[in-house]
Length: 148
Length: 148
Picture 1 (cartoon, rainbow over the protein chains, first blue to last red):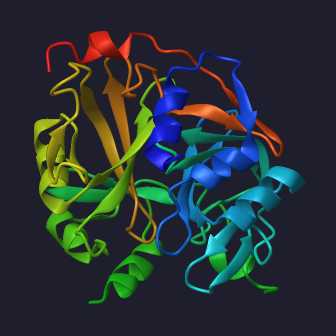
Picture 2: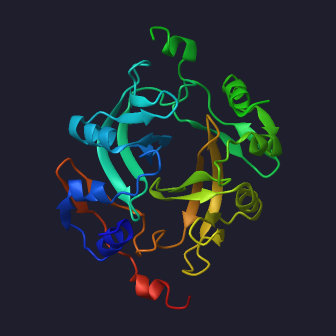
């Protein structure tokens, strides 16, 4: 079954319908690098913290361990969030979107999600003419990576 | 100034620091197709509704008009959200992330954001072994696109 057919067929299913996760992962249209984007949202406050990338292996690891592991495109290897900063993400819920090409991870983030030391990576507010920085670091990034 | 230098320099700026939006848009590392991903979040409830793509032109249009316009990759043209379904997105706030490669749009979404008729595109809950449909359509999609 093609990816499109798989996810189109799913649309008609009602709440509670189940399917094997291995079949879902087979149907995901991974990009040329084998990745899909994953949005991380703090599960209780609803704050969107960051977006990063996952391949099948790190998604399966995250679902199984309950700790979020991304794929680092710059380092070309798994990135267990918090492994150098100590600011880990526990996975509370993972959701896939209607065409199977984006993940939404509801997480419990310890401290800042952003390498700049800010809680969220989304800290630049855009307006038509002028843009504005709209949050400050919780922790100095020099301190965040002092032991890495 | 390179994209990396631009966004690295920004990290040291405190809340309230301003810069010209045209300089920010010049620094965005648009992908090979000239696009970056944009996450849409309902501004008051915090619900993540969907992810789609934007080029510079549709981002500028959205910032100026206050109505969200994406770039449709399948149709290769601007996609003014709601133009066929009537379910529009008003833009309340646009935020760019720390490396300039993802947008977070806080929106006011009329009705369902998803073409399946569901409020959110993220309706498949993933567990290690079994996955489950976790929401139903608000509107029958046949009705949603009846006039398009």
